[in-house]
Length: 319
Ligand code: SF4
Ligand code: MG
Image (tube, rainbow, N blue to C red; front, top):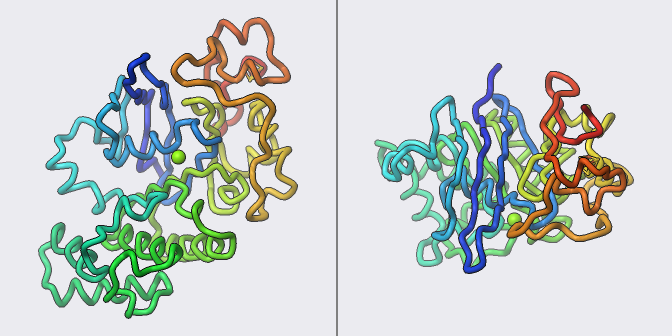
């Protein structure tokens, strides 16, 4: 099968007056072909930074300090901006951001913006592009009238559907999503997730989906990655993680959810607060909050070890 995306030792830091915020600090993970990988973590764990690094939409004070992002075995961090935006962004890898205004330009009608997106990337006629726009808008359950509107004339749910339609317009092989439903109410959230699930089935793209909502992710994903304080602490198939969570943080997250496949249940807050990524704890970053912390946890960072061929964990208890 193989992996469409492989991230190796990625470090994305933000330069501030008082030092570097280590938002993504040595992340490795992969997205197997045509699979959905969900990344779960509290806010401030580095999820959005991970997504923004892949799509190359980082803020100016961000610095990539190490690692690789291999898309179909090619390091996309090494590409120049022009070829990345021509060949990869939207066409091969597309993005569903949390805030639709990151994608929708307020001065264009939805239709014009979508047609432009096609014409900017493909050698096709305007009529053909328009036909595709109509069919895409239909497949996210929107009426064609929406195409004549400006983004501010749409509801939050409609906007997010347009963003999904935009993301899938050029038939990308990989979709990366950053909490695309978080700002919406529960009913609209469920509708949006159903649309994503339906489109995934039809178009068979691969997906990396980050969220703080583990229950939502479990219902959508084939694999789960658990992110804590800039690192992936556990990765595996959903069933493996659900049946045998191997990192204390994952165990606490799962205990907080009565039914993992039920939507809408939020992560219970775990006692203690997420660490400051300017000065993260030494050793295992979870040690100040971990009920099983040992002396070694305060000084030595645990290595990633496999507990099955598809399941790995970083914790001194699993050696
Ligand atoms: Fe807890 Fe130590 Fe494992 Fe970290 S390495 S999760 S502190 S037991
Ligand atoms: Mg975020």
